[in-house]
Image 1 (cartoon, one colour):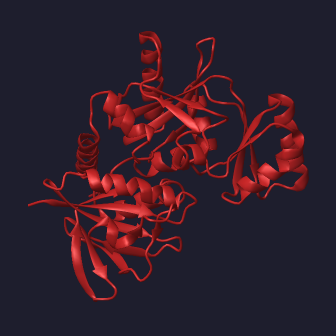
Image 2 (image 1 turned 45 degrees about the vertical axis):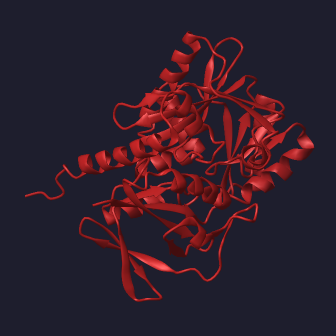
Image 3 (image 1 turned 120 degrees about the vertical axis):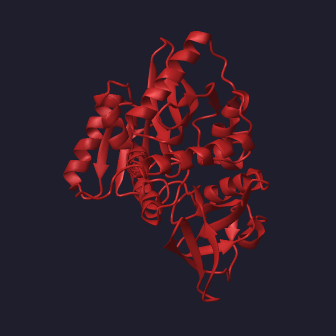
Length: 365
C-alpha cells in the first residue's frame, strides 16, 4: 500500500510565495507510483487547506502564485501510525498522512515551530528536527555556535527592537567603525533575501534597519566579505554527504529578485569552477557546519571563498528552495542524484530519523 506524503507549503511568512513555487516542483517530481501525494497549504493567516493536486489550491497564473479563495479548510489530528485530516466542511476524516514534506521557508516553517507540531503528531517529516531548525533559522545563534566550534563566520552586530535609541545608535556606530561600508543589514530569522539591504553609505543605514525590522524583532548588521559566493548541498542524518559546490555570480548581491523573478540578475555556476583541493575543503566545512548545528536530512551551506583561500560560512538553509532553478537540487543533480531520486532519499531519511527516535524510552520505571 502506498504511503501518503503531504507537501506542506505557504505559511505565515515573508517567503510565502517562494514556498508555493518550491512545493509545485516537489509535488510534480515525487514518485506517484511509489507514493500518494497530497498538498497542505497554509495561508498568511495560518489557516490550513487540503488539496489532492496543486491546481486545487494555487492559482499559478499570477507571478506570486496565490492560494485560491474558498478552499477546503482542515485540521490535523493525531492518530495511530500517522495523522488524520479532518475536513471542517464535511465534518469527516478525508485522508491519513504518513510523512510530511515541509516546504515552508522562514517564519513558522523553518524555525522549529512546524517541526514541533509534527513531533507531537508523531509522524516522520523531511529535514531538520526542532533544535536544528530553530538554531539554523536564527543567524545570531548559528554564528555563535559555529564560533564555539572554531568555524569561521562573517563578523556581525545584533540590534533588537527593544534596544533603547541610545543602544541602537551605539551599535550602528560600532558596526560602521569596525566593518566600514558596504554593510549588509538583514532580519535575523528570515531567508530568500527578504528584507535584506546592501548599504553603501551612512545615510542609508536607518532606512535599511527600518526595512529589516518589518520582518523580525531582531536584525543583524554584517561585514561585507569580498570573495566568491559558494553554496554546497548537504544530505543525510548522522553520516551526511556533501555535493559538488556551486557558485553565484550576481550583479550586486543575490537578492530575492535574482533568486526567483529575474534569471538574468544572477548566474549560477553548477558546479563551481574550483580545483580538487578547494572542493574538498568546502565539502569538509559544509559537513562540519551541518553537524555542529545538529542538522538532519538536508541543508544548504552558504559561504565565501576569499582570494587568499580562506573560507567563511555566511549562513545555512534548513529548507532550501526546490524550484527549477534552486541551487540545492541542481547541485545534487551534477553530483549524480537526479531531482526525483533526491526527493525519495529525503523521504527515506525522514523515516529513518523517526524510527531512530522511537527506539528511545519515553517512560521511567
